[in-house]
Length: 373
Image (cartoon, rainbow, N blue to C red; front, side, top):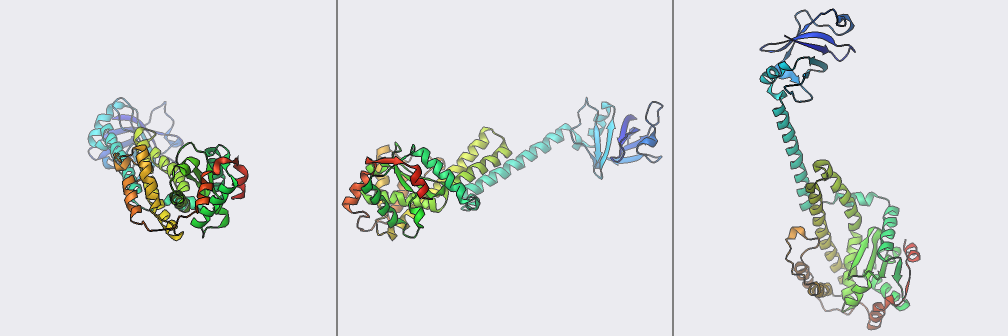
């Protein structure tokens, strides 16, 4: 017989009890002692006691040899039985092994395994599914938020200035208009040229596009610049920048909840984000080809640009595909080469020369950003 206290969950006072180990379960019997609170102040038990069967016993914590056990009953979730003697623990774990520390560790392991499998399944879905929940969420966000964030990023990228020589700006507008004939007029004023310090073009939330002066100087023809610009317009049309931000935060939350802040969660989120970058680049390439064909320009001019950029950076495409932020350059060139068609340059020679000197004059970008909203 072991001493204990029994609470039915309804009374504030526990009942002093004896606990007896039987083949069928634990027999809980009333105990009366002079120094105990009278039984009338708490729950009552029948004269023959209460039997808690072994298969109905539960515990919120594993039973340890040197601790007094606190038990519950599956069919009486509010009731509690506190046994004031750790010597009963071996008997409890022998009859109800699911209450042991070993069984508790096994359940924890299985729970973690299930959570890991769920996370891996989610990662696999994110890696190989074309569904973009992030884009759906991004579209639901107010346009003012996209515009504000995009304008801030453009200001930072351009260091507060954009290139706007009169003739160069006129040539840029002609180029933009030919590629975006169906776009609303304000959207066409969201393309800027700035000194970025690198051969690059960047699209931000809100559909803002910043083309580097270095890119225009590197290009050999206006169609190469047009191909890059049409590619960036594809990013803007598909809301890739907005979706990337939503996705980054969402993936980090999912993996932090599953794995914590350790390396596995960080690596999983990174690999997932890389996949979406590759998928976005392919979508933007296809969009570039459509816009170039519609403008009467040569879609394969972008392949020429990629080929020379590849040679400049000695890009041999030797990284495993999973770790790329862009599709292999050779793959993109092959795709674009299939679209090569004879075409008249998208800008006249004088306009092309003007575009190449657009940075001969620079102005603060803030007023231009406001006029483009």
